[in-house]
Length: 477
Image (cartoon, rainbow, N blue to C red; front, side):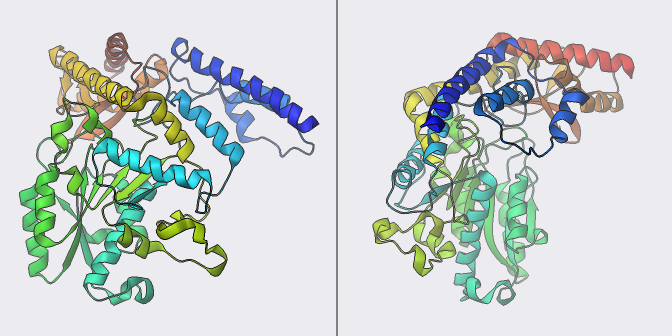
């Protein structure tokens, strides 16, 4: 009874502590470097000999953790693709950890809830959803491994090989096709699955970073003529560098012509389909064989939560199902366990925070927030275009804006050096947070807008910070 009382009291304190933290985010610096003392206090923590009470533990969190956030959650955090946590999702995650099941399968609420939220995600982005055609994962990296594993096994079966039994040695090299803008998780998946990164062809893109369907067809024909076995095209529904969406319909045509598996990386960008002004870019998404999503990005579901969706549920199950006698469960029904569709056996209860996040907003609220982020990105692109000392480096297609500081009178070498240092210089000032990338050999500032609480004034603050930090770097150069 005493333990329960302690938890109840501490949980109430934790709720106040977290609510105060979230409420105070807009009034504090976006990010500040940790002091050497604060960093050391965490790095050198001794293993405690005696236990610590819950109240004292909360005090440690308040003193040593919450004052030093990554920064995502602040309306002027524009770095990488890291979202603010949805309050409903925070509550869902809290409740899920209290239940603490393994969501591998069986007849308990988390399993059935996951079936529904996976279907919800498919409905949101307009992807066909057969029963069992997807599952939640730790993120898009794991979703990609799962999807490419299914693609590999389908290709092997087409060659008369059971790769699960015979292994890769029974196969000729399988060739996949990516672009220079394809996320690194695709290469990691190919390496981990034994496909080999040397068998990933980097297909040409247009100036905006879209994979070129004409170049793809030529690459495939060349590989076929040489006796190689093409099996996969990895397309992007929102690249991480610029948010570019490939011509999915044209790529689906090529894949249909040659019998290749079309995988779409929509980790960040697929939810952009909900913005009426952007929806046309996603034509053909529904024709993919697999789609990777990250609800923990644009939807704001607390990390971690990815999702893989597939058109062929039986292919997915056949790739991963291995059921020992002690895990057989008739209550699972005809679909079996989630652990038969992916790599994880013990699986966390991810679906409750997804359900809570989506249910709190409804489709209408999600569409509103996604559309606002895209509109803010277009506004930022217009502000950059209108400025004499800034240069937009790529069209704004979703909610990522890539640009550089370009005051008059600087040569390319100096511009390159200044813009390479600029993102960190802006971060350290604490008023906005952006990251950098390289586009066409040019250093760029990259702003990703995922927070619907961001305002146009926040965009102006960002550009002021870029100018002031840039001017200081030029002066120091």
